[in-house]
Structure formats: C-alpha cells, structure tokens
Amino acid sequence: MARPQKNIKIDQLVAVLRDCFQKVKDPRPGYKIISLDDFLMSAYAIFSLKYPSLLRFDEHSKEDLGKNIKALFNIDNIPSDTHLRDIMDEVNPKQLRSIFTSLFSEVQKTKILSNYEFIDVEGQNHYLISIDGTGYFSSNKISCDQCIRYHDYEGATKELRFGHNVLAASMVHPKRREVFSFFPEPIVLQDGVTKNDCELNAFKRFVADFRREHHKLRAVFVLDALYTSTPVIKLLKTHKIPFIINVKTTMDLLMSQVKQEKLSGTTGSLVEVEYRGTKIIKKIERVYQFSNDMRLFQLKDSEKANFVECQETVSWTDKDGTEKRDKKTYTWITDIWVTKENVKTIAEGGRARWKIENETFNTLKNQGYYLEHNFGHGDKNLSVNMVTMMFTAFLIDQIQQACCQTFKKAFDRMGERPSYFWEKVLSIFKMCYVDSWEMIFTAISEKKLATFSSS
Image (cartoon, rainbow, N blue to C red; front, side):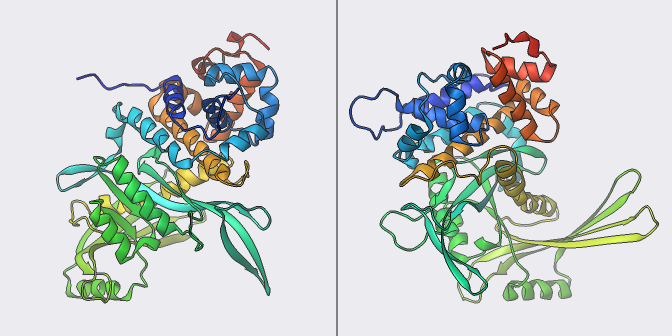
C-alpha cells in the first residue's frame, strides 16, 4: 500500500482542475480558437487571485501580468471578460460536480482527514458536515430564467425582486479552522417549474447527490431548526446519515416530554467546569442534560429522536469589581443514542454548525472572495457557474491551508485577515515575473521578494 501524502501543493490541484475541465462538454459547435478549459481555468483564476471584478482581471491579463496568469494556471489563451461571460453562461453547471469529488479525493490521499474524525457512531468514526443556505444575489431589475422571484415589503410598498441563493455544505471540526466544502447546490428556479425553489428542496437534491458521490463517507449532518421536520428526518434515515439538528424550545410536545423527565429525575446529566483568562478569569459551567427516544410530533407514527440540552453559564468579576453573569441554553435533537460519555461531544458537534456561517459564508463574503458581488448574471447559467468557481477556489485554498506547509507558513505570517495574504499574492503578481506558486509563498513567508526579477 502506498504511503499517504504529507503535502498537497497547488500545482497538483490545478492539474486536477485542468483534467476535470477537459471533460466538460463544450456548448459551442465547430472550431474554437480558445478551448473551453481555458475559459474555465480563467474563471477559476479570477477567484483564486481574489479579483473584485472580471473587468479588472481582463485589464491585467492584457498587460505583462498576463504572462504570470498563463504560467501559473497553465492557460494558453485568456478570454476577454465579455467572451468569458458569454461562454460561462452556456456551460451546464452539473458538469462541474466532478471538480469537488476529484479535489476531495486528493484530500483523502493524505492523513489530514484523520484530524476531522469527530464522533463514534455504532463503532465507526464519523465526520461532521455543516449545511446551510445563503443568498448571494438580489436585484429589482436584473433577472434570468433561473432567478427566484419574491416580493420585498417596505412599509406600504411592494417591490418585485429577483435573486439567487445557494445551499452550502462543509466538512468541519470544532478544533480545526479549515473546512472542506462540497459542491454548492443552487437554489434556483428549476427547469419546467413555475414555483420558486427553496432551501429544503435543494437539501433533498444535495442529500441524493452526496450519498451517490460519497457513498462510503461516514458523516453526521449538522443542521439548523429549519430541518426539524418528518420528511427531512426520514430522508436522512433512508440514506443512513446520522444528524444533529438545532431545535427550538417552542416544540411543545417535545419540550413537555423533556420537562416531565426532568421532574421525574430520569433525565441524564453531566456537569463540567473550566476557567479561562489571566487578568480577568472567567468561570464557565456547562450543564448537559439528555433524554432518549422522544416523540417529535403529535402524529401516531411520529418520528422519534434523542434530545440534548446544554446550559452554559459564564461568570466573572470585571476590573471594577462588579460581578457579571451570562447564561445561554442550546438544544438539539439527534438520532445518535445519547450517553454521559458522548453527550458533550454531541453538543460540541451541534455548536460547530456555526462554522458554515463563520468559516465558509463569512470568509466568502468578507475575506476577499466577494460572494455578494455580481460577477455577471447572464441569461442561463452564468451566475451559478461563477459562484461554483468561487467555491472551487475556496476549497483549493482550504486544502492548501490544511495540507501545504509552504502555503500555511506564508498564510499564517500575514495574521488573522486572509485578505491581507491575497493582497500580497496579487501585489507580487503585479510587480514580478514568477515561475511557480512555491516561489510566491516562500517570498511571503521569508520576505524574499528580491529573488524575483522585476517586471
């Protein structure tokens, strides 16, 4: 058996991308001056280099900077921004799915996934996958055939708006900052359907595709309260996917059963206390309580699940001598049988759901990827394809951060703001001729810009 890889370098990942792109069906008939994989690689390069617009990328590609883009992304011909939009609008988004399965296969060849094993379910280690939806485009003027239509009410006025949303899923771990995203499921108007698409419908499509593409991957889905429903729970059980779902305390039947168990003293419990801080020391007390085999709904054949509650109380004395106290309660349902040995782990998994917001959506929106910027809307698939290329760049960056020591050293040197790192990468692109990504990352980590010949 071959030894697992220790490092994955970006050249290796770009080669995987190129192979995937060459398998995408070209929507154009006849002879083409620019190959389709050059269009797709150019679209990826925009998000890899964190350009704020296609126009800026087009301007730089026509300058000396274009030599660097061609060399590092293995592009023969860089299309203009208009030409890129036209062709990307025609590409079938489903044909881009192999990008994510191929890149994830590269991660599986390393030892890194052992760090993401989170919980033992029936004797097998499982990973956490956090899932949620977000919007990335909204307009009262620009629309396409796939746009969701909705009305925005402001006061007495009603305005028709058009938008695009996406359902995203990332493999997460409470103690790891890197996440690995799967193919983002578009929430768009489906072909031949007049009714709006929604997050739950997108989730159903995602589950079927996920299990088909990753049929051996042992995963626990972590979801918000929107997914507390019989159809969702049955779907997950059908596909043999364990779940941890945030649940609201307004579920009367469930909460009345939990209350009755608490009164009778049959609820399982665990208490832990920890202290944090140096000058101001905070005492954190967590009380875990759990009940198994709870009915969720009034129907006789109602699904059952196990209930977990975490009451967290933080107390401290501030610099003025004032006693402070903050108390929060978190609640979940799960199909994993809860015990004193695993209740804390289940609660940590439930709270890790926020990593889809913090490490995925927040990074894409505020750390240089410009998720909510309109990179082109088109008439067919442009908007969906461009956001897919953005998620592709994000996944490759996360793989580099987790699996490439040279990248990690350069990235960490720039501090907590990823945008600073990408600004430095782009600045090197603008002022120097570069031969490899390795030279760029080494220059940032070791302050050796002089190793480049000035352009």
